[in-house]
Length: 407
Image 1 (spheres, rainbow, N blue to C red):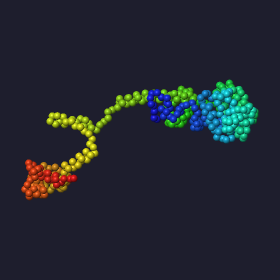
Image 2: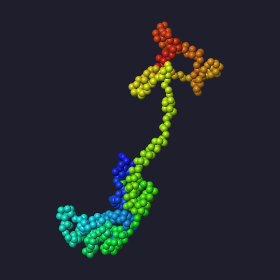
Image 3: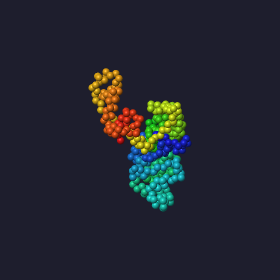
Image 4: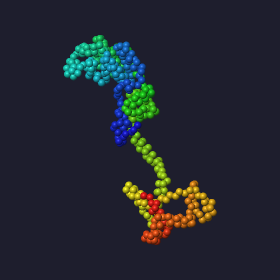
C-alpha cells in the first residue's frame, strides 16, 4: 500500500497510511452487520427471546467485549419489522437527565407535535403512557438499555411499571458482571436471555481488524503482519476494544518510524548500487583521443545537425558519388591465370575480380576508344583547359564519373 507523508510530523495519520478514515476508532460503524464477527450463539439467543415474546433479558460482559455492538445489531434487526418499535438508550449518557417515556414517545410523534406543539413536554407520566399506547397501536415496543446499571431509581421504577400498565414491551439490558450483581435490574423481571459475552478468539479478532481495514480502503490486516497482530492481541488481553486501541497506537508508530526506515534503506541501496554498464562503443568513444595534425591537437565541437543541414549534406554526397555495376560471371580462364604469378585475384563464389597491368591497359584502351566524349575531343583535337596537367588515366576516370553520375 502507498505510504503518503509530507513531513516527519503527521496529523492525518490514517490518510498517510492510505486509509479513508480511522479503521481502529472505538466506534460502531454502519451497516453494523458488516462489522460484526461471529457471535452466532448470542444472536440465536436474542432471536429466540423475541420469538418467544419474553419480557426481560440481560446481556453481561467485561468492558470492551462488544455489548454495545450486539445491542446496536439487535436494534438494526428489529427496525426492519414495522410491527416493533425499537428504542435504544445508553443509560451511562443520559442518567437522570432524561425521561425514558419521552425517549419512547418522541419517535412516534409527528413533526408538528414534536417541534411546534410539543405536547409531550406538557404531559405527566400517566398521560405520556396513554399517548405511547395510542401511538403504538398494534405495535409492540422493544426497550434496549445499554449500561443499564446507571439507571436512576426513578427510571428503574418506570420500567418496572410498564408491565403492570399492560404495555406491549420487551426489555433488554446490558451491564458488566459486577455492576449487574450490585444493581436492582433483576427487579424488572426474570432473565430469559442470559447472555454472557466472551472475549474474541484470535481468528475472530483478526477478522474484526480485517473487516475494518477493508471498509476504509485497506487490504488484509495492513499495516500489520499476522505475527505482529497476534502479539497485539495478547497484549490487549484478548479484549476487542483494547485491541483496537493498541492497533491504532501501533499503526501511528509504524507511520512515524516508516520514514526513518525508508531513509536508511534508500541510503544503503545507494551505497551498494553498482555503476551502470555501458556498451563497448561508448567505452571506445570515451577512450578515443583527438587526432593530431602537424603536432597540434585538433578541437572538435560536435552538435546535432538540423533537418535542413542534413538534407543539404545528403544532396552534396549524392553529387560526389558515382556507382558502377559490373556483372561478372564464372571465370573460365582460371587455369591459365593461375600460371601467371603477377596476377592478383580475389575470389567469391560465382564472381571473380581480376587485376593486372596488362588487363588495366586493355581497359584504358577500350574506354578511350568507346567513350563518346573522348571521341568528340579527339575529333576536335582541342583538349579542355581543365585537362591540362592531368594524366590520361585520371581523365578517363573523370569521364566515367560523368557518364555514370547518379542524381
